Amino acid sequence: MANNRERVRVEVTFEGGHAIAVLVETDAAEGLRRALEGDRDAVFELEADDGRYFIPLRNVVYVKRFARDTQIGFGGTT
Image (cartoon, rainbow, N blue to C red; front, side, top):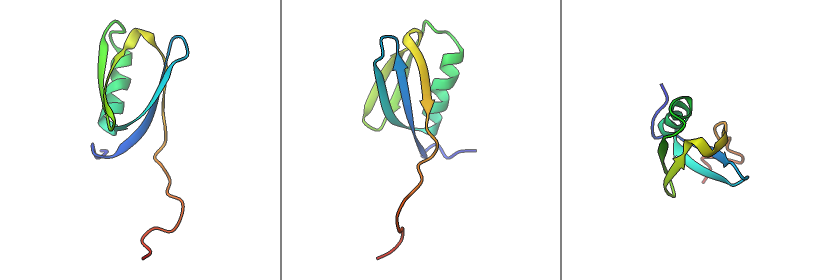
C-alpha cells in the first residue's frame, strides 16, 4: 500500500485546452481517478501542495499521472 504522504505530479487537461499541473498526495490522485469513473456531473475537490482545486469532472478531457520522480545527482553527500 502506498504511503499517503508520498507525492505525485498530476496534469489535468480541460475542454478548450486549459491544463493544470499539480503535486498531490497519492491518495488524492487515486481519488481523482475514481471520481472520473463515477458521476461526471460532479465536482471533485483536489487538495494540492499549492492550494485546493475544484474540478468540474464533465470538463476533464484527460489526466496524466506522472511516474515517481527520479533523483539525479549525488544524494547524501556532505
